[in-house]
Length: 438
Image 1 (cartoon, one colour):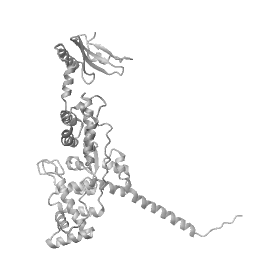
Image 2: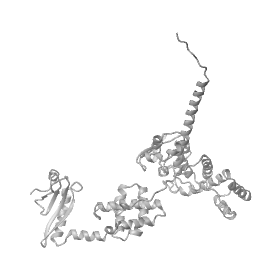
Image 3: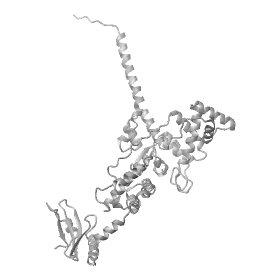
C-alpha cells in the first residue's frame, strides 16, 4: 500500500463505476475514497468490539494530506480507546440550538461574506426576531411549520417579515454546509414571501423649493447634515456613500468609491454638487467629508436633522400651497410674531379639529435618490444612462422609473403629430400644377 501524500492523492484517477478506497501504508485505518466524479475524501476506519467504525475526515483540496493524517490519527486513537467519534458528533449536534447556530453564523460567516452595514442588519434581525422565537430549539428539529409560524406572526410588518425569512434561509443553508442539518432540508424552502408595495416618493418642484429653504435654515444648526442632503439630491448617491465619503475619494469631477453596495463605482460630480463640496470646511485630522462631533469621525446620525428639516419644509409647504393650513400658520405667526414650528401647528390642529395634508413629513432620506432618478427620466435621459449614474447593476431596478417618461413621450408625440399636420395643411394649400405632355 502507498503512503498518502499530496502528490500521490492528486494523481489518483477517478474510477469509471463505483468509488474506490486507497489505504495508507503507514497509518493503518487512514484512507482516501475516490468517486467517479473525481471527488476525493479522506476517511478513517477501524474495528472496536467487533464493530466497524467509519468516519469522514475531510475533502481533499479543502485540507492537505498532512492535515488529514493528523486528524485521522487523533480519531483512530479515540476509537481504540473505546470512544465512537460518530456517537460523540451526534451528541454534540443534538446539543446545538438555533442560538448557538446564529452565533456561529454571525462570528464565522458574516465577517467574511457581508459588508459592515449588512452585518449590522443581520445582527439586529437575529437578536430581535429569530432567537427570541426559535433560539432554544434544536437546529435539526426546526421544521417548515415553525418558520411559517414566525413569518405569519410578523405579517403586520411585511418588509421585516420578508427580511427575517431571507436571513433565516441563509443561516440554515450554512447549517447544511457545517453538517448540522441534512442537505436540502432548509425549513425556509417554499414559504412564500409577502407581496411588498414598492414605495416611490418623489419631491415635486413646489416641495423642492420648500426643502431648499428649510435646508438653508438648518445650516446654522448642522451644516454637515445640510451638505450631506445637498450632495444626496444633486448626485443621486446612496446615503451610506455620502455619509462615509472621504476627501481622498473626491477626484476632480468624480467621486471614486473603492466599495459600495454594488462594489467599486464612480459617482459623477456636477456643478451644483461641486459647489456644495466647495462650501464644506475641511477638518484637519478628519478624513471624512460629512464630519461628526467626534474627532476623525463622520456624522453618524442624519435622521435627527432630517426630521427637523422635513417638518420645517412641511410648514413652508402648508403656508404656500394649502389654503386651510396657510390660514392656521398665518394665525399662529400673528400670535407669536414668528413662523410656528410643525409641533405648534399640530397642537393647533388638535384644538381646532382640523386635518392638514401630510406635506413633506413622509419623505425619507432615500427619497432624495428617487427624486434625482425621477427628474432624470422626466428630463429625457435614457434608462441605461440613469442606471449607470445611480450604480444599478440590474436593469429592472432602473426600469421602475420608466412610467415617469410618459409626459416627455406625450410631448414628443404632440410635436411629431403637429409637424405632420402642418405639412399636410401646406400640401392642401398649394395650387394644383398641371403639366402638359407633348
